[in-house]
Image 1: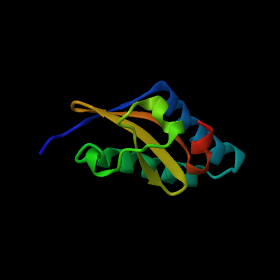
Image 2: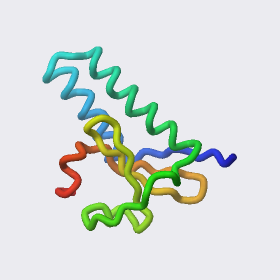
Image 3: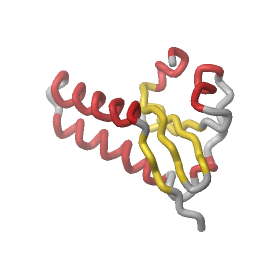
Image 4: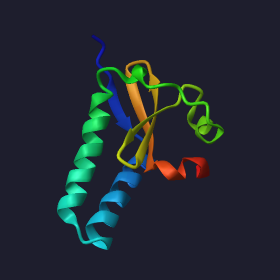
Length: 102
């Protein structure tokens, strides 16, 4: 079985940090923030094993990330990624409702 390395773009890392800060400091829910970010990271780690199982996205707003862009959801968040050899590149982690605005 092929094992993939996960690489986060700067934008994806900022997205994760911003999400954590909003939940933790705006909504004053640090335990929830930790659980939510852990859940996101757990889903992303699953991509180490079989990232190809998710469909290639054809939505025009996602094509800026490449022709083989894919998406996986965690609760109300969308994780946008591409596969390059043995690397899964996480481009963005955004609210699924905002995908059209990217």
